[in-house]
Length: 109
Length: 114
Image 1 (cartoon, rainbow over the protein chains, first blue to last red):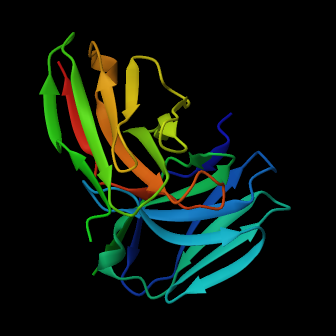
Image 2 (cartoon, rainbow over the protein chains, first blue to last red):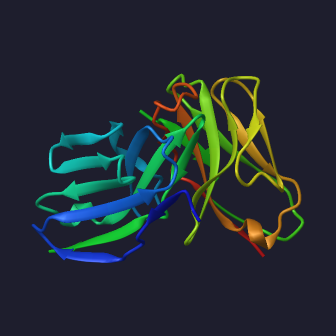
C-alpha cells in the first residue's frame, strides 16, 4: 500500500465550476501538507502549504486537512482554463516528501 | 529569478552509456534533491543532500550516483544507462532539510534510453 493515495482522474469540468481534489494517507506522522500544480512539460510548482489540521485559503484555492480521517483536499473556486494541469498532493516526514501520483484536471471554456 | 535550473532538458542515450544530469539553484538553499517521475508512480526520491558535503539515498537509488559539488550544484550520474531509467528527472531544493520546508522544483530533464 502506498503511503499517499490520489485518484489519478482525469477530471474534466466546465469553466466556473468548483473543483475538489483529494488525497488519503496512511501514516499519522505526517504534519506538513502541500499541493503542487504541474503544467505539461514543467516542474511541480508549490501551490498551497498547510500545517496540521484545518483550512487555508489563498484566492480561489482552499486547502483542507483532516488528520483524524487522514484526508486532505484542495478546492478550486471559479475554475479557469488556466487551471488545467496535474495537481499533486505531498506530505513531509523527516527529510522526505511523499507524493501522490497526481490528478489531471482539464477546465473546459 | 531562475530558481532551480536543470540541464539538459532532453537527452537520448543508448543502453550502457553514461551521462550526468546537472542541477543548480540560486536561492541559497542548503538542501537539494533528485526525483524521477514515471506514469502511475508519481515522484520518487533518488538521492538527496541535506547540506553541502552530505548525500543520502532515497527510495530508488540503484543505478545512480550523486555529487554535491558546492552549495549551488547537485549532479546526478548514470554510470551505465538501462531502459528502466527512461524517465523525467527533477531536481529540487529547500531552505534546509526540515519537514516544514517546502521544496522548489526545476523543469526537469526528459531522458530516453534505447
